[in-house]
Image (cartoon, rainbow, N blue to C red):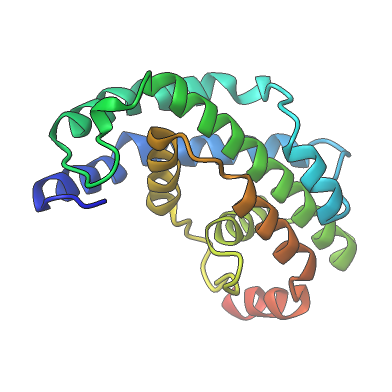
Length: 202
């Protein structure tokens, strides 16, 4: 698939506006709620079972719908102008439904991944982990499970995450395989090294 410069510029504008802020708010809420409970995912295998179950994510459903409400008109504008070599965006049925399905799955996957990371951090430190650190690790692993997370700063690659969910939502692609790889990476993560990096950065 390909975009002309105008389409890419429009998509980049979307990434740096309301959608990115909506994703940031959603993640903050998601991780904070998870950390306030005593429930944790202890292994990657347990996490893989959980992401296969649609539990409704009712506690952040309003934020999911808010994101979809902002995203759908923007995606439809791009769809009318896109010239893809394989699947034209104008043939995608019900953008809102597709985006909602993808986002709900992605949020569920990130919550499970965050819970596993929180469990590992609690085991390593004996204390409640910093929410921002849990979120940074989860998002970095979710986007690139083969790459060591950069925790020198806790800035989040929200535009990249937003773009991933938008494009997968438009084309109806499953995110579960990537999430399972992220769970495996989280289970094998060298936390001692990462925590030392955070101490040095602080």
